[in-house]
Length: 314
Image 1: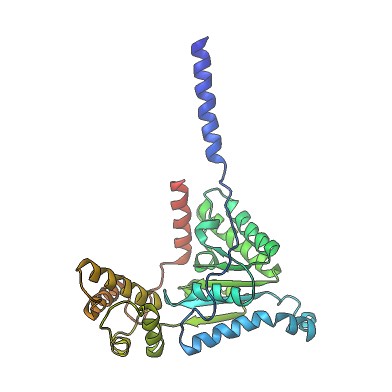
Image 2 (image 1 turned 120 degrees about the horizontal axis):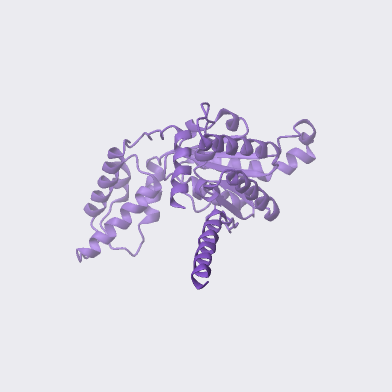
C-alpha cells in the first residue's frame, strides 16, 4: 500500500505540474506617467513641426468632431491613429511619451513580446485586454515596434502558427475599426505594414536622422557643463553625419568612461571620435550605412519566428 500511495502521489504531482504549465501566465499591462515632454526632445525642425501637428490634432478632436459637426459626416473617424516611423534612435519613443504628456494623459506602452502567447488563441485576447485597459484608464495606447503586429498577413498558411498570425491581424483590424481614441504606433520598418492597417492610420510622421543644427543641439545637451573636455561642438557636429540622438548619447558616455579608465584629466575629443567611428563601423557591419536602414526580413516570418521562440522558451 505505501508503494501504491507513493506512485499515485508522484503521478498526481506530475499531472499537476503539466496542468500548471498549460496555464498561460496573465500578462500585466500597466499605464505609466509619460517620462518626456515636448521640450525634452531634440529633433530637426520639420520633424518637430510634425509632432506638434500630431499633438494638436488629438487635442482639437473635440472641437472638430463635436463643435464643427464632423462626427456626423465622419462617424468612424474619431480614432486618431498616428504612426511614427524612421531610422532607429531618432526619438520616436520619446515623442510618443511627449505627446501623451502634452495631452495630460498616461501612456500604455505595448511591445509585441508583451502580448504574444505560446497558447493558440491567447494573443488576440491579450490585444483586446490592452485596448480595454487603455479605454478604462483613459490612457494613450502606444504600440512600439508596431510592424511586428501590423505586418502583412500570411497568404499560404501551412501550420497553426500561420493561423495564429492571421488571427492576431484580423482581431487587431476589427478593434481598430471600433476604437475611437488616440493610438500611437512606432516602427523602423513601415514598408512591412499591411495596407489594411495603413488605411486605418490617420497620420504618418517620418523621423529623420539629425541634421547639422540638430546634432549641434544634441552634442550640447549630452556633454555636461562640468565634464572636463576639449570637444569643439561645431567641429564634431560637422565632422560626423548619419548619427542618431542615441548614437551621440552613447558616444559621449563611452568616451567619458574611456577617459576615466585611462585616468585622463579631461575627456579628450579623440576618445569621442573613436567611439563614433566604432558606432558607424558597427552599423555598416550590420548591413547599414550612415544614411540608410536595412529592411527587416519578411515580417510574417519574423512574427512566426517570434511565436516559435517564445513557445520554446516557455
